[in-house]
Image (cartoon, rainbow, N blue to C red; front, top):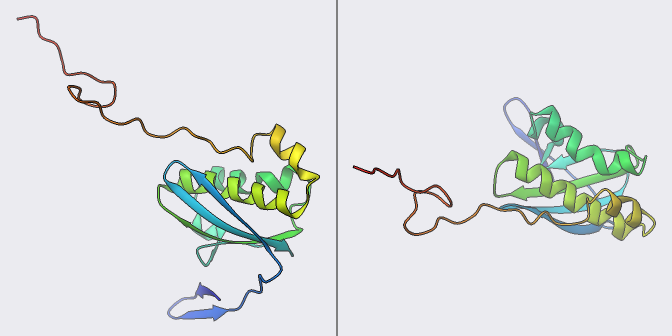
Amino acid sequence: METIQTSSKTTKIKLDFKDSKYATGRRKKSIAKVWLKKGSGKIYVNGKLFSDYFSSDNHKMLITRPFDIIKQSTSYDVKSSVKGGGHTGQAGALVHGISKALVLLDESYKTILKTEKLTTRDSRSVERKKPGRKKARRSFQFSKR
């Protein structure tokens, strides 16, 4: 069951994702659970349309990129729940999850998406703070006198 928020009350609509493929995408601290099935091209993120959830045009373009690469932008419906991190990390996790689900749905997409590096997890993350330093690499200001 998905919830769609209207002006004052929340209405529940039922989305049938029984014959869908599931994949998990990750980026930084964000985790996206993605269900993908044949449909009309609607993408739901945490119960909202992705265009309502992500305000930046760059994030919207990033999320639709896997569908643009396989040239089927209106062939699949996506239902996802994303948590952790910020909007950029969540968008990256969503792209990773959608790409993995597309490969599960059709193996022929694997080479196309792999060459664009969408099925590979981006392992870059925040470096930890080191003892005796102000941040991960920044040291305290040195004074000679």
